[in-house]
Image (cartoon, rainbow, N blue to C red; front, side, top):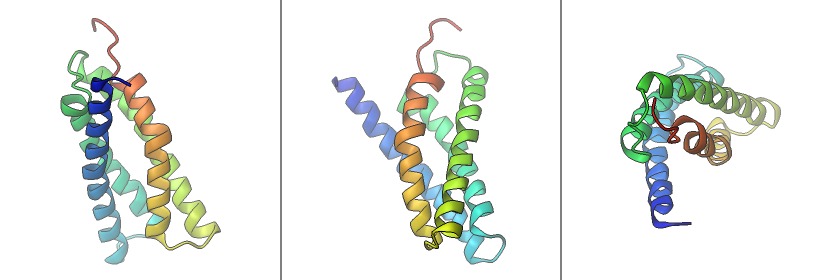
Length: 133
């Protein structure tokens, strides 16, 4: 691993912390105020985090302004839709099937989805340098 890769991973993790704080903040607010249950709140929180993460990824994490934002945005939407589904499915599984407290389930699921889905897909698919647009 070279220095540039290390910096990218650090930025990704810092961005993930910021976006996760927004994501969880939305989720907890919705659940604790009784506006909706954990599964819907998870999906909405993930959407807020995803929008923020796209802008951080394009401008700071991957410095990926080489491609048109619409092209990246479409790729990001596909990856984020899958991420949202994985997060909601994981939340459902851990809360409804295994009976974990919703926040515990959310922490476990979001960590796994970020590590094994989001980072690799952002690095290799969404924000990869694909040459001239």
